[in-house]
Length: 215
Image (cartoon, rainbow, N blue to C red; front, side, top):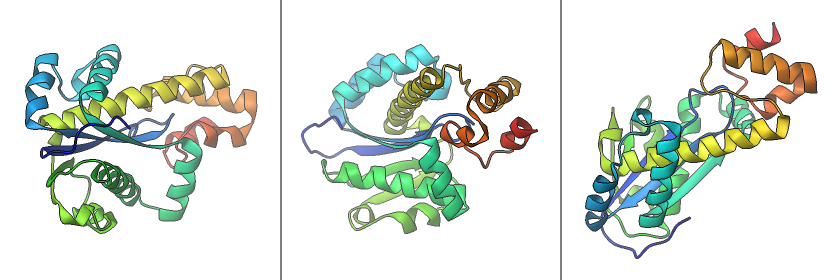
């Protein structure tokens, strides 16, 4: 975690990897103070989905230097275990978002948290612990339009890309983003080379893609 002096401001929370078959689910939090907002705008910070991978990684490095950030990374094996237990992606997301919020509130003083809404708002509210319940939590669609959430989205995406590359190197098989025919081909290559049980080490098994990979 990057540290900074506690102050007022806004905490933004966002995730990356939710729609990607391979790689982890990464939830990031970014605490942005009023003084930091102008610096982030000058850098061109915006929703990670509007940036190239390289640009997202560059911006994330600047954000982590300027702001207090945190990461909650759930690798494929842990993800599959949690999903098998919780049986609900929104509950899993809420658990990760809540941990990111609580982690930041251990370091900074902040009264407002903004997060992208996924499912019913009660999922995240019920997952928060004591510190998280003391702040104003705003959940809304397209929250990435908020600067703090855009910053968090970039930090999350950069970490997702880093972890995906690590997995690709570890298995010596390029693991693409998304869930498409190239992803299915890569999944088949993993199974062929390392056996069927290896798929859970690189992929989110509840995706329908798993059925196509296993034929």
